[in-house]
Every structure is written in C-alpha cells, then in structure tokens.
Image 1 (spheres, rainbow, N blue to C red):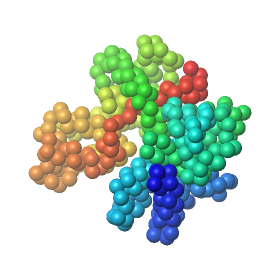
Image 2 (spheres, rainbow, N blue to C red):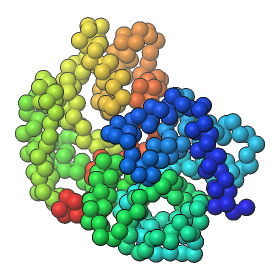
Image 3 (cartoon, rainbow, N blue to C red):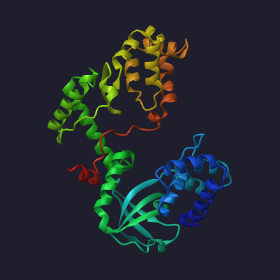
Image 4 (cartoon, one colour):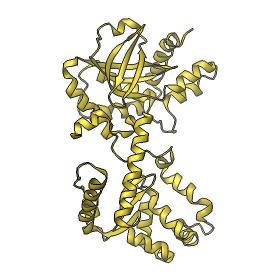
Length: 365
C-alpha cells in the first residue's frame, strides 16, 4: 500500500482518537484559545484548532497526541510509525500554485521560499478548482518525499496576491522559525547576526556593556545608527520597555548564539555574583530567582556571570536553593535546563529578521 493510501486511513483514525473524548479538557482549552475572537466563519478556520491539537499541541505529560496514539498502538508496523512521527512536523504558509505534477499540485511557500509537491487525501480532484497563480493558505504535513494537505485550506484568487504576500511577511516576522526552515535563509540570517555582533563590539568595545536604564534608548539608538552606516539599511528607532528605562542598570549583551538582548538589574545581579552572601537578602534572592525561573529570560546573563568565577556562582546557587553541595561546573547546565527548557530544545535561531522577498517588500527594501 502506498503512503497516500495509508495516510487516507491513518489521518481520520488519528483525528477520531484526538476528538473522541479522552482529551476533552485539553482540546476544549485549545478551542477556547483559538475561538477567543469569535466563532470561525468557514470550514478552514473551524478545523484549524483541531488539526493543531492533533499534530502540535503538547499534552500535560509533554508528548503530542501523535506520540500518545503510537504508545497505545504498539502493533503498528515501522512504516506506519515513521509516517505518523513525521506528522509532528507541520508547515504553515501562504502557498502560491505554480503548476501540477500528476496527482500533485506544486506550491511555493512565500513564508519560507521553498517549493512543496503536495497531495490530498481526497485525491487529485481536490485540486480541480486550482490554477497557477492562485493561493492556498493552510497547513502541510510530510508524506515521504512529498507533502500532504492537512486540515481544510483557504483558497484565494490571484487578484489578492499583494494582500497575501503581506500576510506571508507578517507570518515570517512573527514566527521567524517558519522562515528559517529554509537553510539558505537561515544561513543568511546567521551571517547577518554575526556581522551585527562584530559591529556591536567595534562600537562598544565588547559584546557586553552595562548602562543606566535612562541611557539605554539613546545609546542603543546611536549604536543602531552606527550599524546602519557600516552594514547598510535604515537606522531603526529602538522601542525600550518602560521597566528597562526605569531600571538602575541594564546590560546590553550581544551573544553569539542568542543575539542582542537587554537585561534589567544586571549591575545588582553582578554584585551578587561577586558577593554571594547578598543572595540571602530578599532583594537579592528575588532578583536571582527572576533571572533563573523566568523562562522567557535568556540564560546568557547567568552563564556569563557564573563563568567569571565558578566558586562564587556555586555559592550563590547553593544559598539560593538551600543545597550546600551545589557546584556550578557539575550542575549548572542541568539547573538552567530545568527552568528554561525552551532555550535548550535545539540550536538557537538567529534573532535578526528573516529577509524573505515578502519581508523585504513589506519593510520597503
């Protein structure tokens, strides 16, 4: 049996498994989140949250519905298991129809600028309304070397091209990982970030500089003007959150992997790592805890300070955690992974804007 025929059997079975009641509470939470702005207006939007739940949502145990499905069906053969596991990868995009290839339609995704030979579990008649130049907004899942339509896509005429290209730009800007599926775009972004970091170091003299909060906007703005002068592009006005401007000290760190970030209260944090006894005070304990347990906060500042002196870092965390035997060099990475799992889930993506053609058009160059 070929993969498409098997997919026609497995996909409905997987959807039935996800919606038959065993996951009622978690599925309801996903539906509530998707429908917060109102009920869906068409079939494409109606089934989208279910498809997301089936393929991408993490259950309370950390696994996906697909993974749970496989756990409960140990008798599936290896081909079926490989196919189902591949369905954890979902490509969302704004796809332009570029032609047909037997039973498949050829789609070009303006989000990641990759081409996808795509089939439907409804057969090639599902593509009868499509013509080159039209657009399909939807989701694809792997089917061996090809791709399969997942959920009901929205189909648009060629006349709305400009609007949909702008939509693709917004998707790439809001979710750069979607654009960085393209190895060429990823490599270009890594190169751009490395160039920006070199520029930052040339301007400030190091990849870490500590400023007063009320200096950040002016200093960062001046640096961005310097960067534009040396690397091209237009200067960007930095948008500094109020809590950063109000902070006594702020560190700007242009890390090689994490990119440029700013960290409020860094001066006090550095003082605590220099004098570990300060962590027993409530202010010091709260500050280190916020840096450690804030999942959205990069581990970079803690790593930078800990690497200055392992013994003092060990003393800070030993006091903070109440673990007298804590040693940074032995347990530091495990501690950070526990509190910041998202930062260790895979290679860090560049923080620079993915320069797709859609993004360039949207940003005016």
